[in-house]
Image (cartoon, rainbow over all chains, first blue to last red; front, side, top):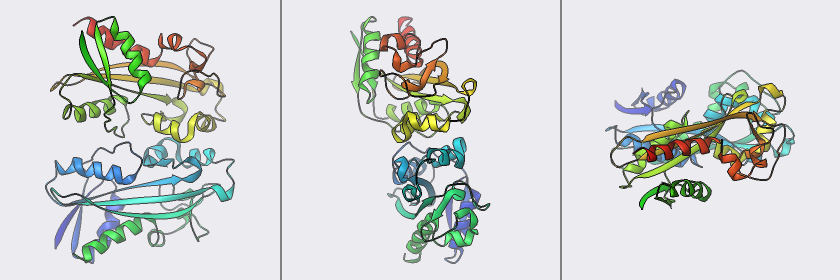
Length: 187
Length: 187
């Protein structure tokens, strides 16, 4: 069995990847060693910078992942700062900012980027996204972060009203992880 | 005349420093070479990381500066992300988030940190802050950023209702710059 390190502080993410990779006979081991996330416009820039930094410290293959919610009416806010903004103003803050924005203009996209790094090589990036709408209020008790205010396209429920399995079938991170898995299937 | 590089994309900041340093016979030269700003809790962390990065590229003494508005009722938001948040949601977004927050609970602090770096040495940091209140609406036409919604302590006007000279006498950046100047006076 091969080993692949997942550098993240998020146990849920690590577990999700662990389950998906198990069918490929690859063991995911979580390493919570931390790395700087730069202030940038795209998740790709954040991931590339993170890999550059980590490659100087880590001499084995690893993956990292970053995600964000990009709201059209707020010019992409909170974007790459989603975690920080959530921690500070929460779903309620986002709903306040969108208070007078009508239903048709509440479009948003959840994005996720996985980066796979081998020592000395440029990272490979795998992006996934899920389009949707920001609800008018907080709904549902599953998931985390902005899940209770995000209704994915072609659905009538928020992410927080779905089980993890249901959500991962078409979520941003479900898709980026699938691309990553497919890459490993084909090498 | 000695030379000191100010690494910033902001001409206004560079000019302000240029004027203050001229009395010390030090010429400030603006260099807009860019450096990564990490996602962190304090301006000090952002400045230290920026210096570490720049010292690998730049072999002469330089200064950088970073500032932010920390709003008590929003748990310090927008903080080190002030520039990005301003660009995305502006003063109006901040006022919306504080809509139902009464006058006495609208406290905020503008903070500024200058870092002075000599090749191979740890940076010296000079911090300045200005306490105040977030106004109920946008007022005044001077300044930039959050100036039209920030009323400094012991004043009845926003920063945007003051001339640059008036504001700099007690502004966060006025204070950090003064500490930096004093350091140069004493070496």
